[in-house]
Structure formats: C-alpha cells, structure tokens
Image (cartoon, rainbow, N blue to C red; front, top):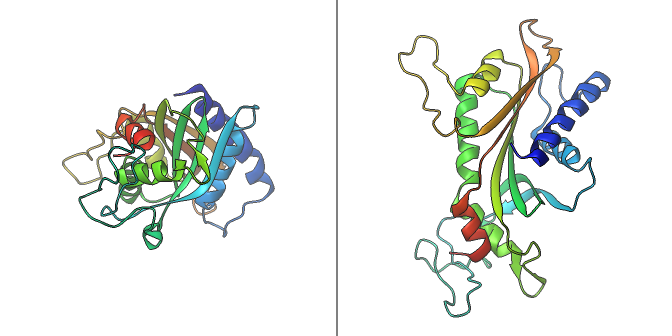
Length: 241
C-alpha cells in the first residue's frame, strides 16, 4: 500500500478511536455516514503537510452515451459509444457522485466509502463501488473537468498514476475476516464468492475495540483497500478517448 494512503489510514484509525469516545454523529445502534469517513480519511492524509488537491462529492456522467471533448485538436470531437450528446453540455447527465478524491505525489486517488451491511450485501455494494471507480464514465468525466481552457489548462499536469481506494466500516466480524482473507462462503452454500477482484488489492483491516450496543460479540472495525495503477483510467483521464 502506498505510504501516503497507509499513513492516512493510520491517522483515520487514531482519529476514530478518539472521536467515537467523545461523540458519535449517528442514531444509537447505527453507523457513521460515509461522508464523515471520507472526510476524516482526507484529514488523515493531510495531517503531514504535503502538496495535495482534494474534493468531495465529485459529480460524473452516468450516461455511457455522451460525446467526448478531445484535447487533440486534430481529432475534433470523438464519441463515447458513438452517440452525439456532448459530455460538456449534458448537465442533466452528471447525476453520479464520487465520494472523494485526493491528488498527491503525481497520483490521483479515487475514493469510495461504504457503510456496514451483512456480508453478502456488503460484498455486492463494495464490488459496485469497485466497478464504478474503474468505469469509463468516471474517467472521461474527470478528463473533461481537468481540461477546461476557459478556466485552466491541465491543473494537475500529466497524472503519472490513477489508483482506487475503497473505505468501509463494519460491526461484523465476518466482514473483517473476509477483508483480510478475500474469501467468503455463505453458510449452507457449496461455493465461495468470486473475490478475484479483491484479492490483488492491498488491504488493511483494523479493529477499533468498540463493542456494538446490540451485541457484545460485534466490534467496530475500519477497512481499506487500494488498487495498483489503473492504466486504462489514467490514459483516458490524461488524453481522453
């Protein structure tokens, strides 16, 4: 795991251990909202002074049928899925939101967070986040946001790496174990879940030691996973389609 992300997670854990003993901004027996988790993580990443840009609730196009604004003047306007709708003009299509991002050390980290769910649903939700972090829609939206000659021109320069970060919290020991081992087979099922997407990711899981108010067997944990460089997304974000 990148030192930058690992340090941010360590600081996140330290912050949550302190803050949850003071005040928990959620209904009794509930979970802290995803945005609190992402914000605290970004604060942890920035605890050590560093040159970084960051943002929360970043919009992106949810329609795969949008026109691409190409930075290559000789190519003009290419098409995403061969349709004629301009991504820059399709304001009504920018309905999806990325939980957050941070750009540091010439690396763009795309961040999604997930609250606690039973293991089967938890994996489905996390996989959905994983897929959207790798999506062309998100990449081309970032390309369009970064290339606005009337506002600025490539503010991050040439991005050297693009990596996805998955954050989650859980009260469930099963989720903690499956995150560590990348293996899950529901009770009574013959086959295990396909976690080939999770296994290559660099992961950490930390039990904070807070017991659930509903069950003494449940304790609160924070989870993080980071991909290696997503070359396909990097190419689109830097150069368009």
